[in-house]
Every structure is written in C-alpha cells, then in structure tokens.
Length: 223
Image 1 (cartoon, rainbow, N blue to C red):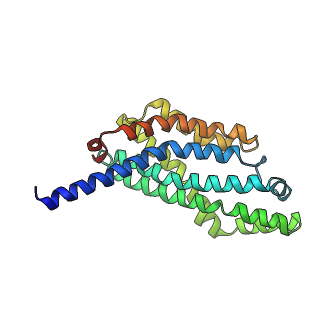
Image 2: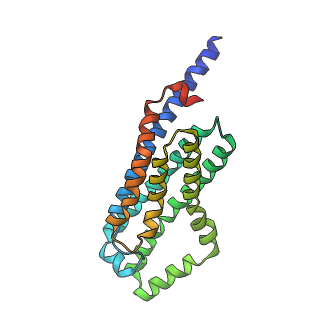
C-alpha cells in the first residue's frame, strides 16, 4: 500500500467514523425532539385562530422544535438504510431516499404555523380560516408537500421491517416503532401529553439501536 492509499484510507475512516456518530446520535435525538415538540404543542387538533392567539408562544416553540425534529429524520432514515446497504442494497437506496425527501417536505410544512399565527393576529377569525383553507386546498400543497411528507412513515416502517429480518432490530422494537408512528394520528383530539406517548415509544424502539451504532466497531459500520 502506498502512502497516498494509506492517507485515503485514513481519511475514509475519519469520514465513516463521523457519519457513525451522527447516525447514532440522530437515532436517539430525533424521538427526543419529537417528544419535546408534542409536549410544547398548543391543545387542540386544528389551527383555530383564537387558539393560536392564546398560545402564540407555544405555537412558535413547537413549530421550531418539530422543524428540527423533521430534519433529524433525514440522518435517521439514512442510518437505517446504511445498516441494510450490504444485504438489501436496492431497498436501502429506495427507502432511504424516499424517507429523506419526505422528511424534508415535512420540515417545510412547519412554516405554515407561523403564517396561521400571523393570520390569527391580522384578520377576523372567519377570514383567517378561509385563507388557510384556500392555501391548503391548492394541489401544489397537497401533492407537492403534504402527501410526500407522509411517505416518511412507510419508509421508516419498511426499513425497520427489513432490519428486523436481518436481526439488527428485534420484533418488540419494530412493534414499538409502528405503534409510536400511529398513535399521534389516533389521538389527534387528545391533549398533547397523550399524543406524546407516540414519541416515547419511538425512543424506546430506536435508542437501543442508536447506542449500538455508537459502540459499533468501525469495520462493522463500513460494511
């Protein structure tokens, strides 16, 4: 091996090492931020102007936290795909890319909370609601942002099922992850603390994997 080759390998080891740390931390940090976003959410399942005015600070804090939570889903899905790349390369590439792009779309949707808040402070309630409904009814919003954003859930589940088959995840982790993704949709009318059960289950499912990735030997992560 030449000096240049050895230097390239050393640089590659540093890069893989940094990526392994990012992946491991993201698997733990994402559900934690997701939980914080739910706990700081204002009560209610709709963006009612009076509710937004009453809880203006919570609306902003929750939107920012959930925005960064959605960003963290990108390294999460890429980490899950990375663990599959040697044994299921095609599935890893497709599910990883779909999940990452979906997470970016989900992050963009959080900006609408600030517009709804501004409308609540600027217009009569009926007009504010009408503007929001008009914007949400545009095909570009529905097909360009909203529906693609929800693809992150199938992508995560597909990756988790595959990792369960390879033995990287246990069945109980898969069960907790699926339940954690579904519960917020089943409890939209409940208090934020009830919806927060979902992120707690996701944390219980992914945190052990994240800690294992952080302890993983470099050669195992490079496979």
